[in-house]
Image (cartoon, rainbow, N blue to C red; front, side, top):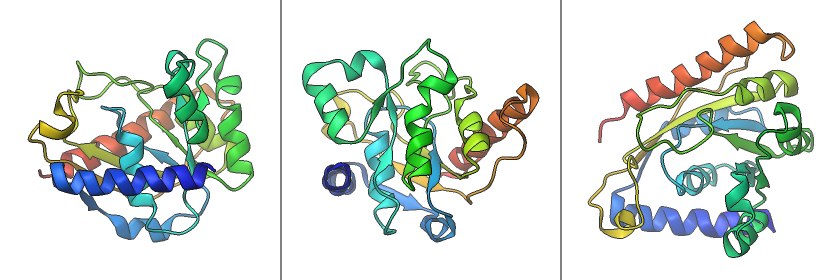
Length: 210
């Protein structure tokens, strides 16, 4: 079910993205280098980020579905929460600890399903990049799965009003997949890999020319 729903949303968003935003995908050749399943990591500026990521990922068989975490308050909303569930998303369970929060994604990776995380942890409309949280690095080190970095540019300060008439140009740029190094139980290792992941994303973002 998750694959079908993500396929439908991904195709729709790609079509509308081309139509209204001139949506471009850069670095698609790196999809072939991914050792599946992988951990997608990206900056986070809008609620459609995940669908754009899916749209690009559909170009390689076996990557989709990509499971993610959703803010608890969004997951509990009647209609939106139901959509999240059929998409294969999970509640973030904030405040319960990193191991509990990431348990569903850990299980998905073990089953051979790719997952996605936003190191910033939330949409921050006030800062270009938020402070990265350790969850992404922790998951990569614990699972031993490859990290697939990317950056999305053009959706800053995205609103419902700009959904179709914002006059935006949007590009997603994929980077070379890599492996985290260290021990997930070591604070310094998790911290250094967290910064490395975020720096890879920032570098990709700065390479995009709209």
